[in-house]
Image (cartoon, rainbow, N blue to C red; front, side):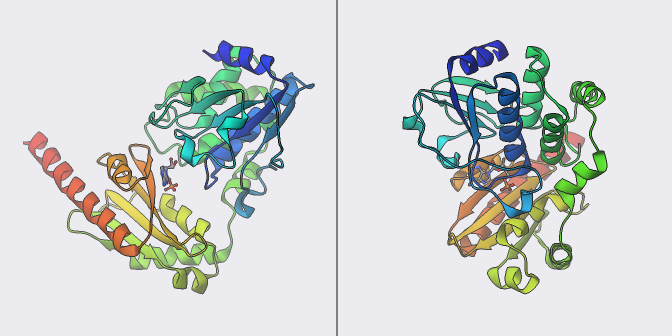
Length: 319
Ligand code: AMP
C-alpha cells in the first residue's frame, strides 16, 4: 500500500496537502513533513501544504497560500471525514489520498491509508518513509517526532508500543536534532495560560460517577487574556486525576458562535457520545461543537451515564 502512495505521487506534478480544521501539532506536522519529503525527493514537483494557521504553532513551520490548481493530487492527513478538511474543495482535484489514524468515517474515493491503532498521523508517515526508503532530513524527522509526541501526549497512551519506539530510535539516531528546542516549540506558553490552568483545577466540577467538567466562558477567556483555541487545548493537561475517569472542557468561542466540547477518558470509550452530537474522534479523545452551554451540559450528563455503566461492569468483573 505504501508503494501505491509513491506511484500516485509520481503521477502528479502538483500536489496539495491538507488536514483537519482546528489545527493541532499532529495535523500540522504531518502535512509539513509530507510536503517537505516530497519536495526533497521530487524537486520538480509543486507541493503546497494548506489550511488555516495558528499563532500558537507558528514556531513549528509555515503553511503555503491556497492556490488554484489543475490536474492536482490532494493528500489529506489526520482527518477521517470530508466535512472537517480545512480549505479544500474536493471537486477541484483529480485524485485523493487519505493518511489517517482516526476510526474510519468515510471513504474519500481514492487511496485510503488508515491505521487507527497508530499514535498519530506522523507515526504512519514515519512508517511510510521507513518502508519506502524515501530520503528525509533532520527537520522532517523533528516534525514527525513532534506530531507523535503531541498526539500521544508524551507517550502516555497504549499506542506507545515497542515498535513505535524502535521506529523513532531508527530515525533519531540517523537524523539527530535538538530535543530541548523541539519540546520548546511544542510546549512553551505564556503565564496567562498557566494561570487559566490553575482556574480550571480550582473550579472543575465532578459528577456523581466521576466526569470532571469545566465551562470556560468568554468572560473567563477574556479575564485570563488567552484565546479560545488555547483554552480549549488545556484538556490534555488533566489526565491523571484519581477521582476523574472522563473529563470535559466546554469552551465558548464567540467568534464562531459555538461551544467547543473536548472530551478525554481513561476508562470507557467516549467517541459514540461525541458522535451523538455530530462530533467524533478517537475512543479516548473526542470532541464536538454545540451551540449552547446547556447542550454541552447534556453531553456531560450523557457521559455520566456511560461512566455509571462502565463502573458497574468493572465492579461485576471484579466479583
Ligand atoms: P479536541 O478535543 O478538539 O482536541 O479533539 C479530540 C479529537 O476529537 C480529535 O481527534 C478531533 O479530530 C476529534 N474531534 C474534535 N471535534 C470534533 C468534531 N466537531 N467532529 C468530529 N471530530 C472531532
